[in-house]
Structures are given as C-alpha cells and as structure tokens.
Length: 171
Image (cartoon, rainbow, N blue to C red):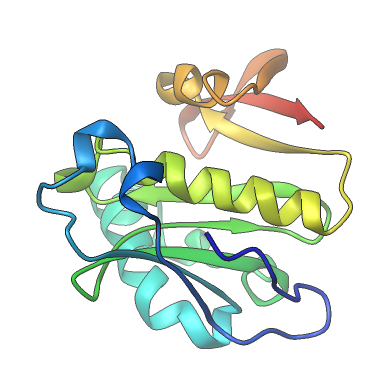
C-alpha cells in the first residue's frame, strides 16, 4: 500500500490499491476485483463518501441527516473504498487522532472492507505522529475494533439513540 500523504497542509487524493496478499481471504478473487482506497480531503471526496454515509447512517440507522454532517468533515483526512469505481465504504481521521464515520454498504460488509479502511486510517495517524487513536464505536461492532487492538474505556453511552463505547488504541 502507498504510505505517503500530507494531512495537515493540504493533500491530493491518493489511490491505494491493496495487493491480493494484503486483502482478507474472503475478498480475494470475488466481487472486489477492482478494489482501491482513496485518501483525501472532504472537498475532493465528499461526492464519494457522502452517499455511503447517507445510506448507512441516515437511511439504515435513522440518524437525522442534519446531524450527520459536521465541521470535522472539512478538517479530516477521509478514506473511501471503491469497488469497480463505486464507493462502498468510508471513514475519517480527525486532526486530533479520532477516527469516525466508519461506514460500509450492507452488500459489502464482512468482506474486510471496513478493516482495510480502518488500517489505512490507523497508518495515517501513525505517520502524523499520533501516539494512538480513539473512536466512538456502536456497541454491536465493538468486537470488530477489538480485533485491531482497540480497548473499551468507560461506560456505554447513548449517542443519537444508539449505544456507543469509547475505544482506544495506543501505539
């Protein structure tokens, strides 16, 4: 995977094409023949990331559209997974090391897409000199984050009517 990027002083969209060996076994040789990760700013990737977030958070989970978008979009590094040119997943890394807005379209869940996005955002945080990352996980997917080394902290709390757990990964 390509590892160079600039997150604080502007960036160009960056294509990261996983090698067959770096892809999870369940994605090798199946419907994700042309899979790539694209890194960049919201101004460059909103037309790709936005529809994924609307489908997952607004349509599936019932989160009000007016609270899905925030000022962090403009300051974050975004990662979008594309399959045959179509956006199928997204996530973002805030300048303070928080990861958020992780979303994968239903058809592509459990294929390793979320893991590739998460790994790329963790890698970007390391490159930016962070000592770790944290996120607010919906509790039903906390085991997913634990597989990447995240540890739960504190009590479960409600965020937009969905139970969440703060999770931290120290480098």
